[in-house]
Image (cartoon, rainbow, N blue to C red):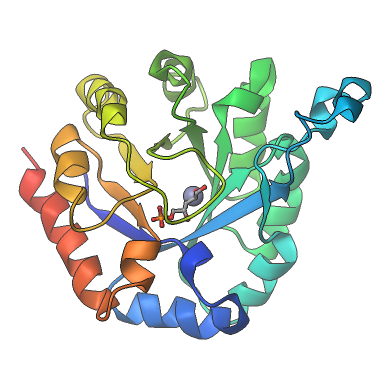
Length: 240
Ligand code: DX5
Ligand code: ZN
C-alpha cells in the first residue's frame, strides 16, 4: 500500500498572500505544498536560439517563483515543500533550493541527460527527496533506470498536462504510463500533476497514482477542504 499525498499547487494561490494560503491548505488537510518553479520564456521559436547553447534555453513559457520565495515561505511553515522544477539546468538549482528549505526536488527527465545519477546524488546529499518528472510526450521507459539506479529517485511525476500553466485539461491518455509504473513498482510514490479534481481523480487513482497535485480545482472551490478530502478518499478507495 502507498499512502495518499495530496499537494495543492500553490501556483493557483494568491502569491501576494502565500504564507497564509500555504497554512490554510495545511489546516484543511493537505499533506504537501506543491511549488512550481519555472525558468521563463521559451526561446525555441526565436532565431537567436541557434546561437545559444541548449543549457541557456528555458524549459517552459512561463516564469513563476524561485529559491528566494521558497526561503521566505519556509519561515512561515514547516510543511513539506514539494518543488517541481521546470527548468533546463536543474543541477544549478540544487544547492539554492536546499538552502532555501525545499523538501522534495523534482527535475524533468527530458533535461537530465546522462548526468542524472550525479544529479540524484547531489539532491540527496543536500537533504532533499529526489523525484523525476516526465512531460506528456515523453515515453515512460525513460525513467525506469532512474527508479532502479543505485541512488534511485523516490517518486515519479507523470505530467497530465503540458507543463507551464495551471487550469488546463487533464489528459486521460497519460494513465497508461501510471499503470505501467504501478505494475512495475508496487510501492513507488507516483504523482500526477495537471487537471486533477473531483471529475478526474478516480481515473488517476484507478491507474495507481497516490500523490495528487491539484491547483485550480482546490483554490477555485468554494470549500477547498472538501476537495482535498475527496481527493484523499478516492486514492484510498482505489488501493488494492
Ligand atoms: C503545470 C504545473 C502544475 C499546475 C497544476 O505546469 O506543474 O502544478 O499548477 O494546476 P491545475 O491543477 O490547475 O492543472
Ligand atoms: Zn507542478
